[in-house]
Amino acid sequence: MKKNKNIESKNKIINAIIPVLENIRKIRAQYKDDLKTQKNIDRMTRTLICVSFENVLADYISLDALKKLRQKEANELSYRSVKSTQIKGLRFEHCTPMNEIIRDIYKKKSIKSVLQNRLETAWITKKEDDKLRKNGYRDVRPNGWEKCYKKCQIRLKKVKRNKN
Image (cartoon, rainbow, N blue to C red; front, side, top):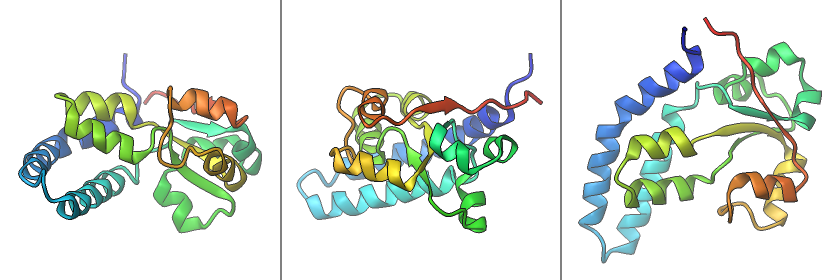
């Protein structure tokens, strides 16, 4: 059985950045008493992860976002593709906020596991993004992102792709 190209691409990126993230984790540990330096390292980590995955396709799309697009377009949207075409009113959302992912990278033993299991993305509308923010879910998703989305009445659909 052939793997989905998007999963294969995501795994290649994960394997490529693991050594970098391991080194960043070691460097950050050396600055445990310097919060300013830790914040700068956290910003660098966030940028590394976001830029590394900007061409990876989203895992989910909200039903409201799907209304703005034809199904075929929705299956092939990466952050970069929407940014370059300026589709109005859509947001590329990390289902688990990046600060939670970064915290887990620093605290858990397996960076690969964190990236494979927590780095899920979705296309949502600006209105849905505003709902998340108004409910206090910008930087934290207590009890998991699925419950937060449900509370905000954001319905997601898993993006299905052809296996190539």
